[in-house]
View 1 (cartoon, rainbow, N blue to C red):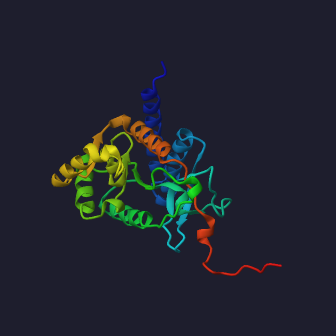
View 2: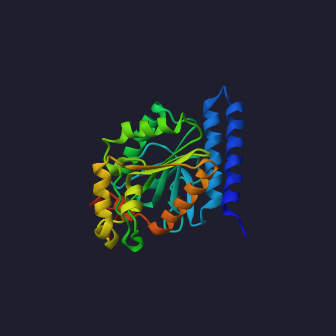
View 3: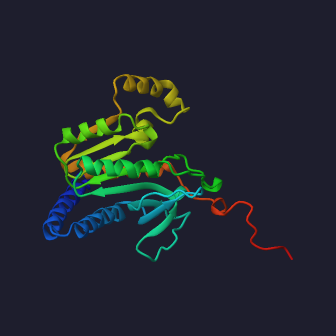
Length: 266
């Protein structure tokens, strides 16, 4: 029988070796090191995600004129939407098209976490008015932090708790992964997987009570020390969420200026 765990363990080992080689080879030029590490994640996602999803980089904008910070990587609906300036190095995507924004760090320390949280807030607060013809089943968009290195697992967990406890759930990151180390779920993603969708039978039956217990215990993230299984867990959970999220697309008319005259009838 095909061993999916072994498959991802080998991929995880290769990512670690390539990351270490990049760090040593570009030790005196950090921008090049960062760009090459981003490529490792890009290659992983292109290898593992179904072809209907596009992995790209660029800027995310909404119909009210707001925009994200420049994203390291993003995952978009490749069947129902398209980017602008797709032939350039940085595309422009409509917010409704995006499933996930991925922030990639060589090392996740307090400074890098602050930077990621600021970008997360900006991305999460973009307005999304989905095209009714492809109304998604899940309207949230994921914000993922991928780091190639960090201090101890407990220090990362402590920093996350201290820096996000007063941030609204809808502005928190959804996933944090360090290959060969750990996987953390939090934010809207954790709420959905732990409690179910609000107003669903699952939420009403047991999700609401579990949520209240977690709030009373100040429990708002789930951290797993997974070692070489961290990459597999991340990919499997991500694909599962993407499939459940359904299709999504922007209504291009929402991006036109209201009441603007483009011509006249004849």
